[in-house]
Length: 223
Image (cartoon, rainbow, N blue to C red; front, side, top):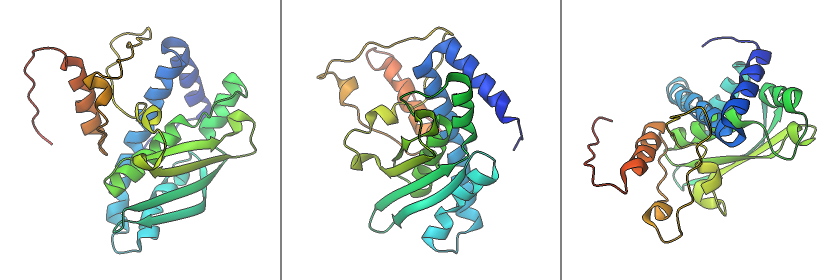
């Protein structure tokens, strides 16, 4: 763990957005948060393995607060691993990430807790072993008093694909934004709806797309 000034994170965020564009910058910070959440999920499984599911799962929001990201207040949390049910709603207070976004770019129409949404999604996905998607439905970067997030399994959302694409790894081959052409609706690339809980799976799956339309042999090995 490394303690850093929140303002310096805001400076890096501004520079990254200016360098590679808003959409790709959001993806980078979301994946950074996803990785952090995944690592904390491993911690949670060890420190409270004998506690109730609710108390064990709550390690994530508590660690996130201790790490200085945001004060997390539960509104509604339902975790039933046996029945495959999951619903979580939290209020974020004093979000350092969103506050720095407002300081740099002002209030706009889109939420700004990219890293934190990635963290929540990564933590829940790895902890529960299935893709979980969180969305920030209120944000101080949109003029709300506080931020509020809702988390559900990917399939429980009407369309989770826009959120999931920010959590899939991709190779940043150039500084300038690279926009991939949209695949037609009937192409295999558009029919691939597979999403793994682990960042390693998502990274391998994204690399597979780069060779899917070629005759190159592909070898997967290791975990």
